[in-house]
Image 1 (tube, helix red, strand yellow):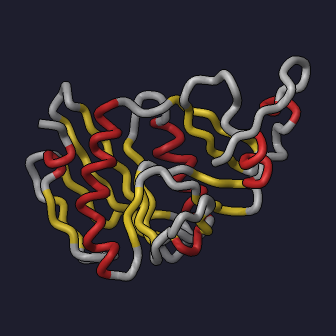
Image 2 (tube, helix red, strand yellow):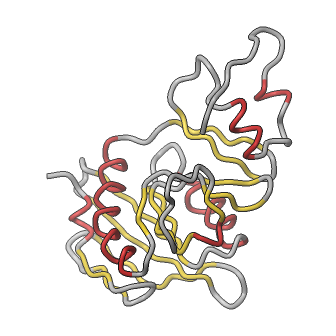
Length: 201
């Protein structure tokens, strides 16, 4: 997102624009000058600010992108980390990784209709949002697959859960595995790997 400077002092976009945020306003006012690196997302015009992920989750997202990339390209799309996906006129998410039906080609805002799969690497700072809020938003926007990943280098723990949009509009568990087991699915494309691969050596 392109940020722009604004006069400091009494006018605060986080306060004045609460409930009004759109991608256009995000392009104008984000990132907020002086704030540390954070992730900006939005639900029904309400800006959601969360701290950046730790090394465990960043590494896992990078590894997953490499695993997903050849499959995404075989479908004519691409695999990415941290895109801005617009779910509705006043809602967007920045998943840790995503597979698009076609290459992004420099687009700053990706319509939800172009996303085949989005995923989140859970962290202590965003667990509730990643488990409940974001899947609900993505399901409502019609994104067919949502992948939830949880990793801990210290505990040598890794879990991958693939959710698929069901007939009633919510996600249902399609495939899952823990470290040491094999995660395997044929939809939305063939995947087979041990979640341990997501942990840094």
